Image (cartoon, rainbow, N blue to C red):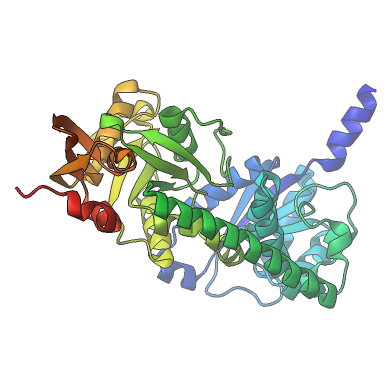
Length: 429
């Protein structure tokens, strides 16, 4: 029995060498190649690979045949032979022809950054929507590369690059893959319509929405769990949670908001993945407030913040009211803490500190709060009384005959939304 277990582990274990090519184009885009390479190491480890070595090359442009230079291909072959590697992972996206050429020259499984991320997502998706989105992204990535999927299609034993659609689907022709993509898009449209119905229901119910966004592994899911007692998977790894989770968060004054955890962002997030997950990511656009969670202990903190802002810009959510939560301060060195911005819109926290959690709910409440209005509600209109408690912060209540006077702090957006019900009951001040 022990031998069988060992054989199974050997069969699926990938031992990888990572390869990074820094071109003039990459330098012009401002992408930090070292940050990207460090993330590739984390991605590989998250996917269960053993990273044996890292090779770097600087080159004006990628080689059309090999991507890296021919001499670097030989260096990679010798390194793989010496270390016993069976996989090479490239930090950039490869064409189908480049994959085929490299496989023939190296006799290794060739994976690029996009395929690695898609593979991780395939292992993380749990809901129907997430599974559909990942398969759609994988097939969209695969379709133009069919001619380049050489030995990857015939290798047995699973491992990286074989999750998700599966080998039987990978071996179908373009027509069948296009048909599958069409069917997945149809299914996704149905899921999106259902999501939109839920959004519309939240709008009509007056639910205030707050979105947690941030770089992957910044601590968003931990924060959601600590603030709301949500039953979410938490692990110190990239993309530990994939499917968005929404929970009710109780604020001071009995006001409730819906707090939503979103998928983590990363540098060079694959285009097909962003396109497939757009409906999920656009939950941010529905938010009244965005909480940008930052791993303050990360040496690449500023670069990670820029990536998040860039993706928010792409989603059309950059103009949303935003609070930056510098998380994991318990892991920071004193000099790191001193460099963190302070002032309005910034908060230094640890998700495991009760006082910090209270400060978060207070700052959310303050940010969402607006003008203080007095409402005279007839005693038999319990529906309006409950509405005030739901959409505003009731500071005081008093009685005047059969009427109830409510002193309520209410932001303009919520008042405008419910003015058709509440306007006639506002007391002149």
